[in-house]
Every structure is written in C-alpha cells, then in structure tokens.
Length: 229
Image (cartoon, rainbow, N blue to C red):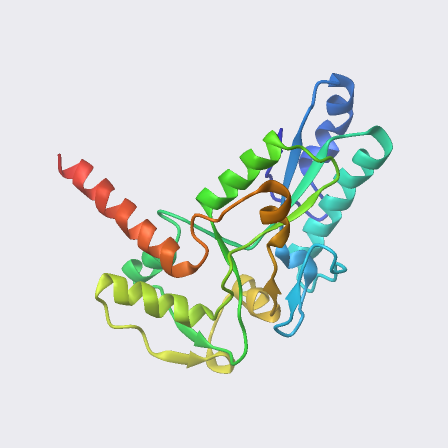
C-alpha cells in the first residue's frame, strides 16, 4: 500500500479515514508513506540525513511531520509495516525545468548560498520497488540526487538544452514570488541519500539534474515523433 495523499491541517486524511480499516484487514505486508525533505527545515546549506531531528519551518513541512507521526503511531502500537520516504523536489517528463522554460514562466532567482536537491520520478519508482522487495518495517529513507545546487543553475542548463537564452537573474529580495515558492527558499540544506544505496542497493538512474533533464528532453522528443506518426 502506497500513501501519497497530501496532508491537511489535521494530518493525513487517509489515516483519519482508514487507519482502523487497515488494522482490521491484517493483510498489509508493506506500506509506504511519501513525505518530503521539508520536514527537516532549514540547515543553512549544511548536510542532513535520516538521523537529523525534524524542525520544519513551513506549513507544508509541519503537516508532513504530523502525518508521519500519525502513521508511526500506528506502526509502533500495531506492528504496521511502515516505510517513510522523504522526497526532495520531484521532476520528470512533463514536470521539469524544461517545461517552465518552454512555457515562458521560468525565472532565475539569485539567493546566494541557497541550494536544493531534486529526485527524478524514475528514481522514486525504483527505490519504492527496491523497498518492497527488501521490506524493513520502520525504515526511513531520503530520496534525493547526488548534486544539490541552485535553482538558477538548473534553469540555465534547461535553457541551454533547448537553445533558448536564459532569463535574467533576479535578486531574491526583489522577486515577486508566491507563498509556496517563498517557503521553498526559506529552507537551505543538502540531503544525503546514502541509506537507499547501502540498504536497498539503489544506483540512481539520474544522479544529477543534468542527466535527468537530458533524459526528459529525449523522452519529450520521442513523444513528439510518436504524435507526428
């Protein structure tokens, strides 16, 4: 069972509606909850791992922390086979910097020292499959790439792949951004992913954004050819 519904103020709606039903079923052999690295909060660019205490700074991170606690309470009290996956910024075909550049909505915002990790959707899938094949109840895994970097570097590379001139740099203090984007820039950390490699034997298909965006572009090109046919 994979849990991926966004939480609300009171936590995970799936937990509130179905926790009792799941316990009654007695048939769950593996359960995975998709959380976020936002639960770690801000670390001023420092490295964090699964042992780092949770200290979310955003509402999104706080809600995810509450949802994690709900499912962990079930696991501790009822022997529920829970696995938590804390995801960095998700991207993939149809959901990447290439798409924001094509749409004309991409911006290169400069906040000195700010970096973030991301994770390609294919690497999320292969990690989940590896965990299902090697269940370890109570395990927590960070899903992130090997190369935390600035958002404007990612946009610049996407522009280069598409042969488009990058948009001008905008100082963070001068940028008019939505609250969701503002919360993204409030946290600054580098996420370690050693555990998925050591415990699950995962080798990332896309260990950095360059490999991932190149693959997204190739997938887009293949899809375009199919549409032409």
